[in-house]
Image 1 (cartoon, rainbow, N blue to C red):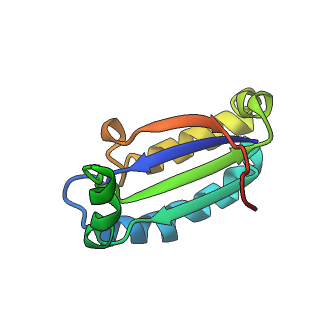
Image 2 (image 1 turned 90 degrees about the vertical axis):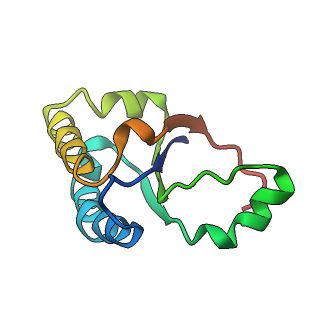
Image 3 (image 1 turned 30 degrees about the horizontal axis):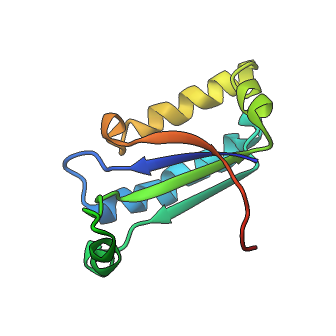
Length: 123
């Protein structure tokens, strides 16, 4: 499967709690509503906890422990189904709606996004 991972930072002026509340209760229903038009097979939100709990994990690795407010993960069957998502009118409309909503709460220029392929080691 193909996965999109989106490391999210909130817009300035929002608290982490406000960001996560909007993401879960406003944005997630939009993804659920329009997911089929985009060919999305699975959508998972990972809401960040306080950084203080992550510091030992970061410290032992010499990491700075980047402060993301959450991570969104979306799965498609393959690259072809991902590419096909924007090839239909319904897909283009759904994509535009989701992007417009993301602009309400995500600091998009500072939120890295990337594609990957999953290789399961432990299921």
